[in-house]
Structures are given as C-alpha cells and as structure tokens.
Length: 110
Picture 1: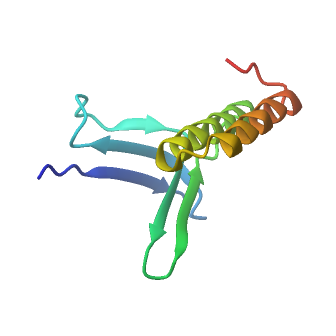
Picture 2: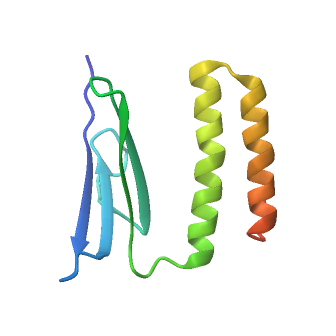
C-alpha cells in the first residue's frame, strides 16, 4: 500500500487572520512548500454523516482571484461529482450555473 502525506501550514497574525499559507505533499515531484492564497478542505465524516470544512484565505487574497477560485472550484466539484456518481444531468445543470456565475462575476470562462 502506498501512503502520501499532505501538509498545510498557516501563519496567523495576532487576530488569527491567515497571513501566509503553504502546502506540500510527499507524493509531489516538488519537495518544497508551495505558497498559496486560499484553500478549501472538505472531509466526509462517515460516523456522523456530515461534512467537516476548513476554508481559509490570506488577508491579501485579491477579490478578483477569489471570484476565479470559487468559479474553478465549482467547476471541478462538478467534474468530481460526475466521476463519483455518473449523474450527468445534474452536472450539466451545475455547469450551466457555473456559466451564470462567471457572467454575474464578469469572469472570463476560460
């Protein structure tokens, strides 16, 4: 069995606001910690049948990048949901919503 470890490091200021976030993985070709401005982590708790989440971003995350981050996250959630369930119809609806989101946020949909 193979095992990989993902490590997130969050530097907080005196008010517990993230100032710096880095991540690294033992399974990556890059062995250095990679700086990021935001991350969303969702974990399914099978025992309690609920989702545990951590959503963090640094205080200098630009709003336009946050909009793009949400758009791309919604898109990839649809891709993951399709692979996990095969539910094509609802994923098409989600993609339609993502296009609507991009229009409302005035994002280039590329």
